[in-house]
Image (cartoon, rainbow, N blue to C red; front, side, top):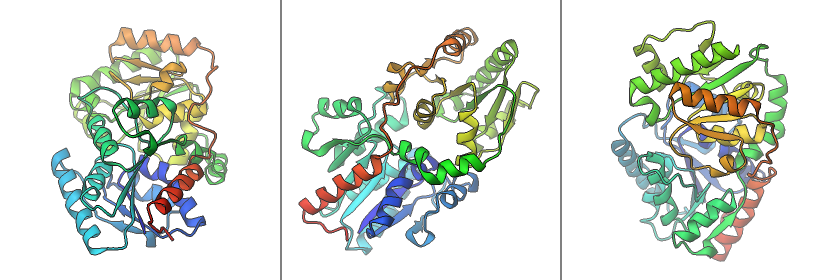
Length: 365
């Protein structure tokens, strides 16, 4: 039995190809959903859209707490599940969320449970980014590390992790975007707006803990959009919406705040946009794959491939800096090649996992 632990929208999106592969190969598995993203717009709508079987999911319904408390509650509940189920051979986690960290830390106390980390090796080298600590800890307790690129593999090797445990698979986000299910739904989805527009998404702590930082981003972008005659469409994360309401920022003819979208509608929105401005990690990959220029409003990135490929620019929220980055990326010709693979990362990962578990005398059937 393999246990997959997830708790957020990006994990559902990126684990979908692996789950689909497990279903087709008739692998015994269960999904523990921690409830880290607990609102319906960030949870159920994605589970339904990706047709993940409900009978495979165990809901912990943990919800929102401080980092420490949330992780501790997750660890306790996941550990209890491990204790009650003796046939678990492996834990599969993706990325750098509190859900992934809690599961990995709980599993590393069980000598017979192998820990498999997908999207291993990402580094921002920014200790103030909560996810940076999560991903480092997960990597160093994992038994098998599946990296999206050579850069992420090299980071792990440089940290002293055994090369024999590390494999490059590409990123399953490419599998998701190129899947027949998603391509069909994108064709069927309605076009959100015909006017040239920018997509904005903001949710990370470095931009939301300080309310003045969020205000600066919105004011700067509104001025830039007005100058260059763009509409800004802002699908607003529930956490960010509370802050937007606090600063009393209202929709204008330039900047339009909308509710969070399902994944297909969001992909269509960014695919047809002129530029994306965001602080998201996953959107750096999606923008690169869909060939849409991106400005990341952050101090650092754990996806340096996108900077090297010149499809992404880091920027502060300062108006003059953001405007300069906007002009630079607006006139730049799209020449980059997606560094995250061709869409077979899930199958590659499955084959490596299968071989690894059989080698370690663990059955997954």
